Image (cartoon, rainbow, N blue to C red; front, side, top):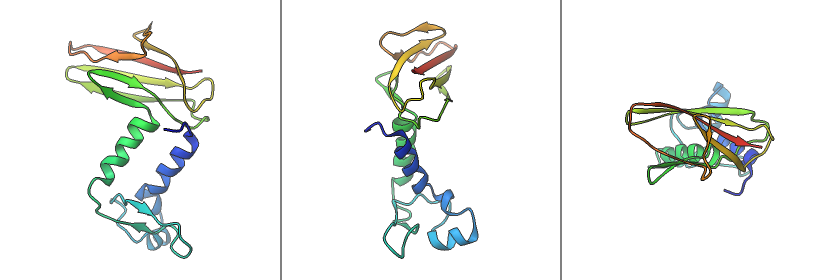
Length: 150
């Protein structure tokens, strides 16, 4: 939300349980199941990397929402798609495939300007959308959306 793409993805990686369970040694430090989203990962001296508050109701869904909405910047609001990515500058592009009722959308975010944030242009099937919002339709069509950070 502050526009720090590198920091946002770094923190997301710190909390991701699979990153703490890659080796037997890592698992011994983390001390939680590799498939359980912790509410926190300790940083206090002597406890660095240990997971806390496992089986915490809602942690996984909040993590998922943070990644989708605040890092990838994909938000659904009142039958519209909005895009506000906050990504690391070194990410050149990424894609999201989204299905809404009978419609399919291929969303490509292109970061030619090597920015963390700042959508400059949104196109729907090659046509620029001035509002930068895409209305969700239910007409059985496939759409290409391009988001540009320049």
